[in-house]
Image (cartoon, rainbow, N blue to C red; front, side):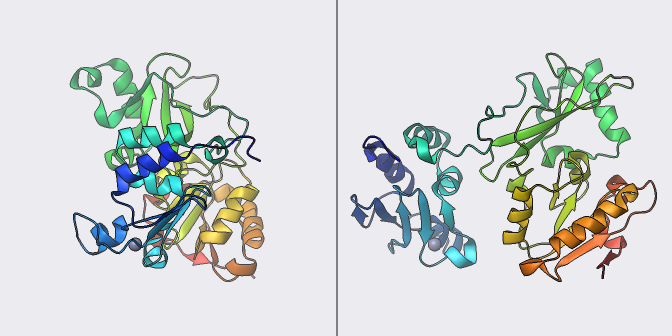
Length: 313
Ligand SMILES: [Zn+2]
């Protein structure tokens, strides 16, 4: 419950700043309408609004919806999604500043917000001088030895640390649906190491790996680890052997087709997962790929089409 009246005016100012002139505004209910940027720009190709005012925002409930394109273009949801897409960095900063506490998205609950290590170096923007260092070469060669291509490095913004707590580790970041870091895994690239993985503490029950890259209209692949997900577009790792309730619900609510692809030595886990998922809305939409023996997803080399998807009785 709100214990004191929240001043929404600064927030409304930010919304005007991003979406231009409002068409209607009911400040008691917190409803305000603008020209929809998706209808105007993405659909009609207009630089300015289309004058229709179909985008309705309720800033007291922190949701938005376009009355014309919400179904066809997913123009609805948490207000963050809209502002993060159309706001400038400064507008987004102000928006966050004026977001009432109760609407701040904290996917990690009581856990600290996950940030990438401050020593994190992106491969994709490493300087020429950096590329000459021994550690860069070690890290990069490690990725090559695991058949990770430059395109994958780029797409997942893979990097490494050459000092600090995560020294000598490859870092694979995960971003949530609002493009905010929600987790990372840190894998040693040294041949001999006491700990292969040193990942941050986070509530794995709520986090969904790289959700910003998931296209729910396409088949969604369920895989084991973060490295697996690099090799298969539109895949979500369970970050362990078992699926969390949160990931299961997310998939259940959104996926049109699910394909389970676990390592070759985890066939019984695949079968269990198949039966767990092949229920209700998902019934008949769940498939499994059976890898042989010691095969893992890297062996597919992105060619999932060569492997047979099956359903189990
Ligand atoms: Zn629209």
